[in-house]
Image (tube, rainbow, N blue to C red; front, side, top):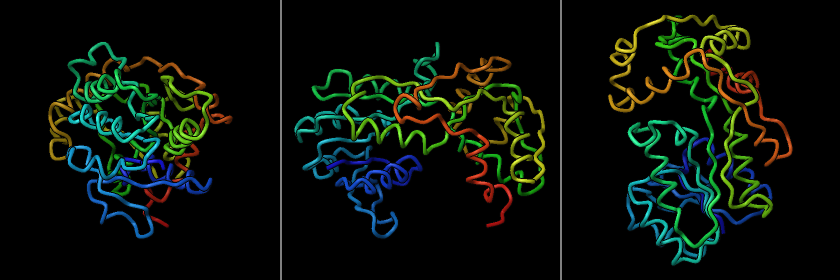
Length: 278
């Protein structure tokens, strides 16, 4: 039995489809299992509530684990007691940043990795960089014919398709070849935010423009959606990436046997989110 945590996430839902297509026994863990779509093999597993761990892990041999650090020690203990042999942790390449200890975005993933470091089971760590799906945050402005506010339009990223991340997790969970490693995942290209905005226009046909704002202006605009300390962490990261291309890896090919999907492919898959048309 494989337990997938973070049941409402795009990686988790894609991973569930891949595992079920192969005939694997799977259950989806969520803090709100009743809100998952009908037909999902749901179980209560709130990563911020250790009381839910034992039942969710009963009979489980492998886990796909979202990086929630608050009770990572308790989860590791419950997994050990349940006889789990392998955990695939969805972390982030942000753990490699020089300020990972003080950056709240990076530190949450780093703490999750460290919390599993001394466990007796095999730990495989996926460290994706920027998800292509981060572009969804621009869709509201684009659909409303407003410019996208960017404090660092020439900061580089390495957008990766969530399906590629799910396929990497699937490979680690179902094949023994690469288990126990730490894997940096990127898309096939390093692109500035400005280049990504241009591709949105090209692929969707919906004109996307940029408003170059100051970091403080962006932080004020995002105050309703992003806590201030997380906003500061993102701004620090983008500042370091301004004009600096992101190194690209071939890890997706190594784990899945095919090259990583491009940002253009992600846009083609999700064009309706920017146009409002089905």
